[in-house]
Each structure stands twice: as structure tokens, then as C-alpha cells.
Length: 317
Image (cartoon, rainbow, N blue to C red; front, side):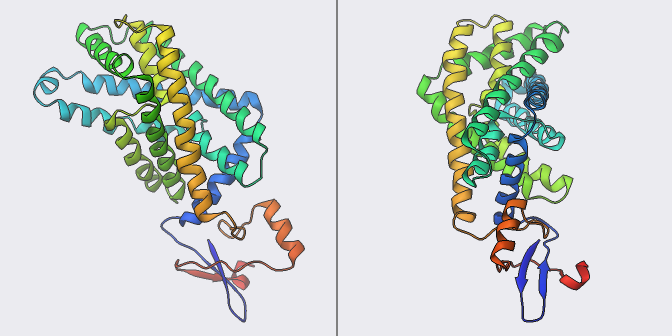
């Protein structure tokens, strides 16, 4: 909801379709503040849940890739099909409120830029999310898929091995690092667009297509790699070891994702819409610290929007 003033009263203006860009980045900051102040054990459990959901989506992409005739005759179509499936991971994570390391780089990063949380709380949230995501991914990979007897067919194993070999062995360290920047740029854009929606389908569609882009481009997501690469190790992919995974699967993608999400997405939208601007209300409600400052100043700032459908202050009462 946006706010404008005339001579007689205050008019609140609501966009029924989506939040504006400035409102969306304010929502990002508020959500990041909430998550950074969660009890650490809750953050860890939430991150474990997110890792599990990523692994379930990753397993679905392996199933979609194991269509022999299509893989031989229309490989591009197989890749498109598996890439269309993978965004369900982010949708499930955000709709359930789970904590993903890559998303946290934008959420808590913006909250830190706004001065709502100290930098060490941001880094602590990243740290807990990383290990929780890893635990969740390894649990589903080893217990549900591994000891559950899934992906044991030779054709399925071949698909996994060829994918992991191309993902981990072929590219150089700096290739993975650069791809990881682009990956989390798109993932955090997906989160940003999802938070702009006001209903379930709008949020899902906003998140779907940026994640589809990163998946079909083959960019590197540190949490997705927590499932894909260990899955390849489980199935004895040639030349893929735990040491190689840590050096080329975790370190470059971790650093690149932090830069892509925190810098290219979070910092950019903060600079564009919040830096040097008056506090922004969401559905007529200011962030508590902002409201206290405004009350001290004695007046609310003017905030204009192109939105429609109005209710006056009297109607709000």
C-alpha cells in the first residue's frame, strides 16, 4: 500500500496485483531482519528443511533426464524439461518459510544495509544456513535416495555420472566462481519477484522463470551442488572425490553466490530504491523503528504511487 497526501486527509493507495519495486525491497529487508533474529536452532532446522527440498527437486530433475529416446534424439528438450521442474525447489522453500543460504545473502544483506541488524548477525545467519542446507541435502541424498534404493538402474546411474563429471571435473575453478555469481543473481531475483506477489500463483510464477534460466544455463548453486555432487560421489563418478568437491564444488560457488545475491541483487535494489529515501510503509504499516523516528519528526513523509483503489484515513478507522 502506498501513501499520498492532499489538503483534507491522507489517502492510502493499494495495488491489487503486486507490490511496487520499492515496497518489495522493503519487504526483503523486513524478512531479512526477522530471519536474522530467529533462535539459532530454529534457523538450523529451517535450513535443514530447505536442503531437503532442494534435494527432492534435484532428484526429480534426474528422473526427467532419464528418458533414453529423448536424450538421444532431442537432448535440448530433455534439458528444458528438467530445468522447468527444478524451480519447484525455491517455490517450496519460500512458501514454507525455510531458510536457504543463497536467499539469505540478499535478505539479511539488505537488512544489514538498512541498519536493522549488525553485520555479525548477517554472517551468523549465513553460517547456520550453510551447514543446515548441507545436512538436509546429504540426508535426502544418502538416506532417502541412497539407502532407499533409488537411482540404481544403470541408465539412471549413467545420467548422474555424466552430469556430475561435466559439472565438477570439466570446468576450471574460476569458471565455477563466475557462474555462481550469475546463478545467485537469478535466484535472488526470483525471490525478489516472488515477494512482490500478493497471492500464491503470482509468487510462484515470479520465482519460477529466473530459476529456470539458471538451471538451463547450467550455472552453479552452492546448495544444489550439495545434492548433485555428493550424489555423483555416491555413485562412484570417475575423478570426483570429496576433496575435489570441497575445492571446486563448495568454495567457488559459495563465494560467487554470496557476491551474486548480496551484491548484484540485494545491494543493487537497496541502492536503487531505499538508499536516501524516506521510510516505506507496507500495506499502511511502517517498520517499528522507522515509525518511531517519524513520530519524533512529527509528520509522515509523502509517498507517491501509480497504484489504484483508495481508502481514506477515515475509512481505515
